[in-house]
Image 1 (tube, rainbow, N blue to C red):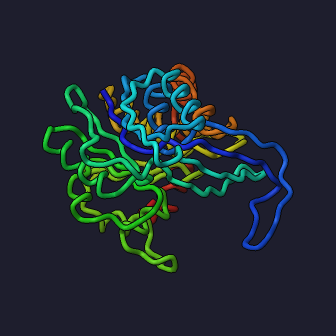
Image 2: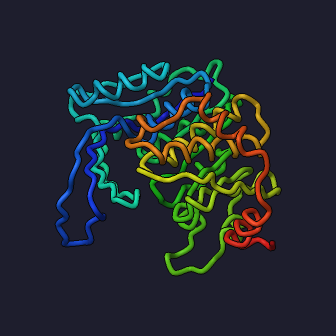
Length: 315
């Protein structure tokens, strides 16, 4: 059983030709709301794309924004542990998606900020605890400590990017980050030219996975480095793709898949999520992920070589 502890937001999404620059007003086009939030997205991905039994601890307001979030999670067969707060609105996110499928996101945490140490449900039967950083970091740290004490594997998607306290880092079994988040945790400045390889060497975490967008991903697993090039897709909306990767990866690990196979499944799920609009609405089924993975019988050596070079490892 996977327990996801984290955020749930209602996403307000507008499509536009490009993402506005500071001070610029852009005339958008289609507008729609979607269930989102890193925690909820990852829970749906665990259950739907990964086919794993999944529970979620989340906080919601006592308002209409909460309803579509509950419906989406329950529709994916996620068992819910809801903290209902009457003083805070359900979390929301405001997203602009450009014609080249990139996005800019602003989150209003709302009820997500009320999750506390005492809200953690029983860890009986839980094999993996998956968390993010859209809820209070003090609670994330407490949950990690509690899970480690119970022998539960702790997986942290360190997003949004921020420095992590030592008390949290020492209780993480698997850390999932993108390039910016890796630099923040490794204390590299925006102008630092440290390679991904150099940044990985600075982290004292058993397993670190770095997602690299259209390049793919790399992982350092107990000293061994693995590479998974991205699957070729035509992106429509990248919102939620990273969350889909996280959930599918943890589900694969919960199914006891070897790391190379788990990275392939997670990459396939994330790639498919880019081909559909929305966050949770874009997450593929477990069967769809398996079909895409099965179609890729071998990875071209030139792609692997390019990925190694990009990450700063010798080709």
